[in-house]
Image 1: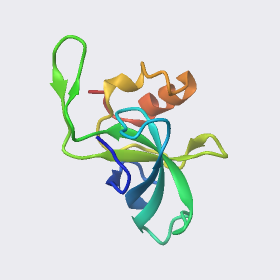
Image 2 (image 1 turned 60 degrees about the horizontal axis):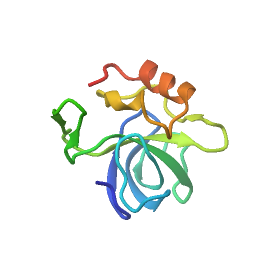
Image 3 (image 1 turned 30 degrees about the horizontal axis):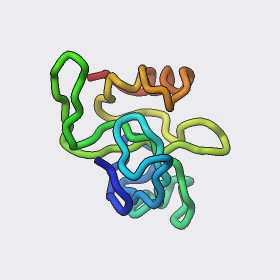
Amino acid sequence: MILKETILKSADNSGASTMRVIHLYRFQVKKLGSFCKVVLVRFNVRRKLQKKRKYRGLLITQRARYSRPHGIYVAWNGNRVATYAERLDKFLGTRLFGPAAREMRNKKLISRTLARRIISLSRALI
């Protein structure tokens, strides 16, 4: 479960290492494949990200157990988010670290082109 003020780790190579959730869209609790508004807490100074700027994040993995339809529960070691540029309609990173959830393909909140981009950037879908 992701709530406001939750600290998330970055899943891409955009230059951010940790981010804080400042706004949730639609619901108060977020799950896999949903967007949230984040602000940088720690980041690499040499990259083009700025400190006080707000970014949109796509939740890729979550620590809470997630149930699949055929009865299996899936959980990851931590909450990870990919940085997404709202205005440009693309990811700020060029690579995703670690696996992404298989449910990314079927989410209704994500467009098909965005889902294809996640699949091509990540190494494996679990």
